[in-house]
Length: 404
Image (cartoon, rainbow, N blue to C red; front, side, top):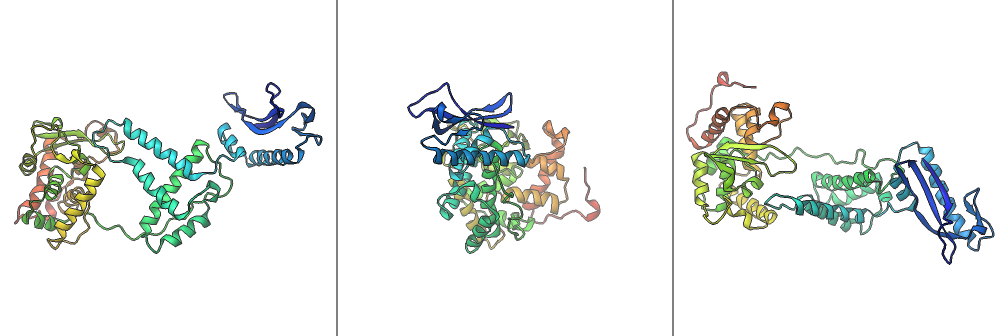
């Protein structure tokens, strides 16, 4: 890395020639940013890269030049490799505004969402970034990157501890950390001190179980409700622990030969769901049949995020009225399907992963899974039968087998 301070003799203004920095990292990575300083050639010391004492604004310019040289020397002494853009931002002090960069990230995420081909728009990372930005702005109206220190984060935790859980506090810190790290990666900010996010997370209590047991699911099924939210809840379970976003985006074209075959709508996953539609699920789907719609359910007509929130609130009320007080949210049917299959029925976990569309990290699983459909269907049916057969008898321990 070489950084020099030069006079641009090819440009001339009424204030003189512009003073610029020559930042050289490699032949393909170099920049020539201008400062807001000027000098005529007769007032410039070309050998020492500084104004002569005869310069009319010597005092103000020399202070800036010394500051540049101090920072340049600090960069060279650090031994840390930086690209030209990182060096420029550091020298010019353009690496300060956390919230400005945060807003930029929100715009980028919104653009990605607009370009997405997914039929159901969830708000994605943009809404998450926006919510957390609002929290930090409420705590401190303006924030520069160099203000993000261990002490700053500790004070934030202390203030929030009166109104937030440890998990909530950690979420806010995690989002700030993501913005900080991205700014460093892009060269928007160059950290000078210690990394501020070391050992800052709060210790959390064990996460509440979000699943229901066989006995709890039986109670729900034996106490039917006319609510459409109740029907959504059971349909998610009956279709193999389908996520609510996948239920909302389910199209009639995804159904062929009595099976659902679609790619999951979550994040960048490429997992395929290929599950049999059993009679219990088909009965609910028939209830929502709309010949005019390409979708199986009417959820797509509404704002997804608001509708999911409403669904969660309604199903929590329905289930609590049955004197079931386990934690319930939009993912409970999914987690319950997984828990019942793996922890109560002792079915093969890899089969259950394929049923619910969890990512499998081995090479064989790239190609739509590794288990025959009839094997998956048997496990799927056992899980449904466990909750709808009132006198269902679980197998003895000696009968448990693992196909893995």
